[in-house]
Image 1 (cartoon, rainbow, N blue to C red):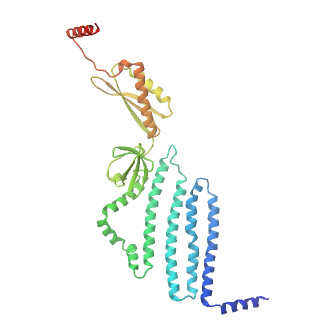
Image 2 (cartoon, one colour):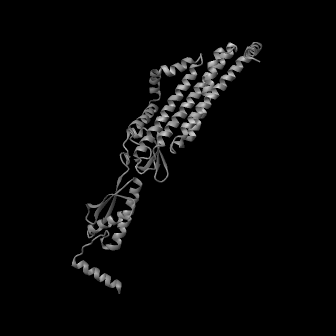
Length: 375
């Protein structure tokens, strides 16, 4: 059988086959072609993913979800492209086109959300919060998490508006969402001014960064670390494992302490109250010995000064430096315990005491009382 005969047989097949069957076959071929294209793209992405280093390959979970979201886009687009040449009834073609259009919008929104998550994980894989000097890592973590949430909200809003615009009767609603942002903004501004202020505060936090993930802060007289930053609230992990939920506007409108704003290094303060007879040089030497024997001290500062006196005691202030707030707290407690132990063991007479001065007559009476008690 030559080529002319084969072409004749093919022409006879299509001539004898009803148009709906041909259209259905063409639609199936379009979907198959889209799946083949998807397979090729998947292989290219997989090859690129395998070339990543170990840190970037930690994004495998999100990368798999990204492939799942992308899988349905190309077959759907191919099917939309062949719809005009198919011979289905007009109302069937129109309905199928409408459903496919909505499906493409959903797939693109899904793909966009997963793409943002993958980009975030790739960026964050280059930084480690567990590092000793994690200032840059905390900056990037804070920015990426807040930016991801903002972009996710934008994508969802645009997806909903686009889906609404595909319906003839409610198209105006979708257009209003996109084109009437000014009027809607004014209405929402009066109706939900507080909510908008919270949203803008979250964006401002991401840009100016008065706080970052893992920052050590004092909020509402509570010491803790920034555990999570959202667009509306901040979670502070308190030292005793409680969680303090703080509105994000608090960090814009009210003062708070940030112990790790520029660096994690801190100075710890220890106050000792003792008698005037305590030799300060001996106490200084003891502090030097204490800090040199512990890895909690970073070697920057260790000193004792007399900062106050009263009629009964002297106030000694010890300053010690540490690499982070946790080490500073432990070092303060250690220095306080060791110095108290040193004073009790070597200079017990220098512990705080109350002095009473007696004249000769009263002193004689006291001796008589003591003598009678002894008898």
